[in-house]
Length: 149
Image (cartoon, rainbow, N blue to C red; front, top):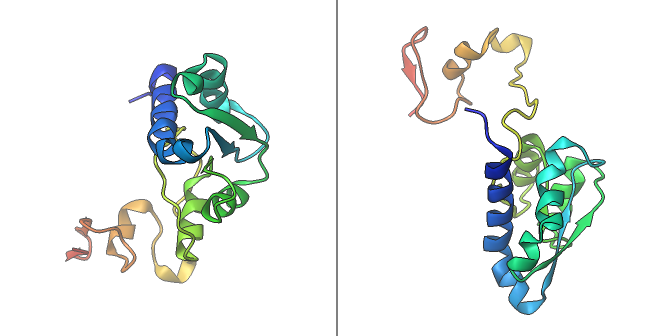
């Protein structure tokens, strides 16, 4: 299912309004750290600002330049910015290091992340990954008749 621009903007603005409400009571300015130099995935952030959606929600948004998804994840986790745009891999890596962040929405239907495995794992295609001890909960593998639940 393809997401319409209206839905993506709605998720972006809705998430910002919901999460910023606690922040905006103390200060009415919040920041969003971009992942990289502005590109298509950042359009909803700029459109929401241009159409006044943030202002309608009672917040002033400062859009900060990107320096990479990892940088965005770490600065948000350190409390330097309220929001950031980061790819899923950077969020997972940051959480694995104990950085207290959560993902609240997805701006892209496909962000180019890949499932990878070492050659010695024996996994040669995604369907086989359910047999791995690292498989996500509720997956099962017909090949090895093992459930990971």
